Image (cartoon, rainbow, N blue to C red; front, side):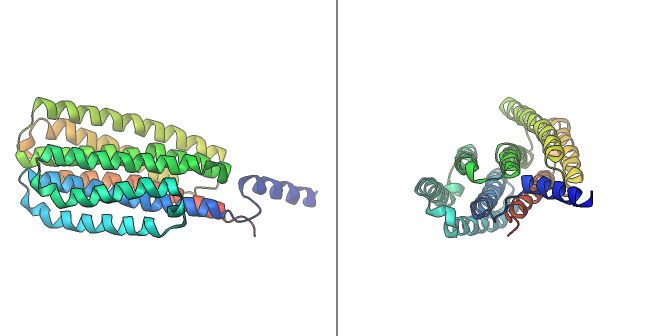
Length: 283
């Protein structure tokens, strides 16, 4: 009877993990980590630049720090095995070249034009991340496929909608006034962020149930933190920023958005760590 139990446990574990180490899954995990770092650094650069161009001169030094983070992420991407893939390399090179040019002229342009230009490159990077996940999905384990899909299609877009909410809002607070267009944009971003958060909570609940033990015990707390953070930030944007923009500190508004992005990235990192662990196999 004891032998039978051991055999059943072994078979159950083999379903969750390959017998051999999955190098393709490891390489995919490392590359999407670098993509995430580039997206986060570009989002921060965009938001701080918008705050600076709208009158918050204290943001200038932080812009240069975020640009350095962008350069490091690009350099790391170029050093990884997946960079050898011609399709991935072509798209990544186009993004990095566009960002370098944009950084050079960002302070010389209209705030709205600069914000839109950074947003365009972030969108390209998000699409690249989703392409990497789908392009190499056949090389991933069932768990790897499920969790990477959520990471690419929900978590990273959530950081982007939060980043737009943060960057536009910081600019509004720096100006101390709000336009009809600002109100429409903030409300639309809040709606998208709420919708993605609902998808995140539902899909992660399903993955935890489907792949027990893969993500660890902390993931539920991390998801709760995200859920609370989304509600709090949307409330800040709608009830304080849009109603009394002249009374909102742009730095404090920016920092609360950063805190929410950090909470999302914490769950992302937990998920990516689980992908790497899942890729180890048994030998």
